[in-house]
Amino acid sequence: MSPQGAPSAAANKVWIWLGVILATLVIVKWASIRTGPSANKAIVAIRVAQRELVEAQWVPANKSASVLNDAEAALNLAWSLLEEKRYEEAILAARKASQLARKAG
Image (cartoon, rainbow, N blue to C red; front, side, top):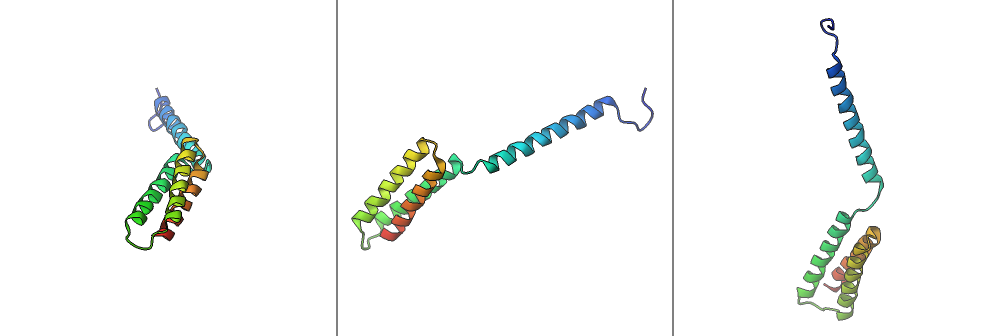
């Protein structure tokens, strides 16, 4: 029997497991931050570029067909790069498409 107030072996095991779980979560979070751009970030950038391109195509202003074609080509490139899991390059291509769409609109 353990004296009154002394931690039991079961309580020690619980604290050890909690510590292991916490350490694991910290390591996973740190690793995910250090790995750089993710597919989710690339998808968001591509979706924003798509929206801006659609808006530029619907604005009845002076549309430059070549600029819109360039924006569409950059957007297609971004999708291709995303499929190849080249996330950072996909984000850059999507940003270029956004810039071109804003220029055309």
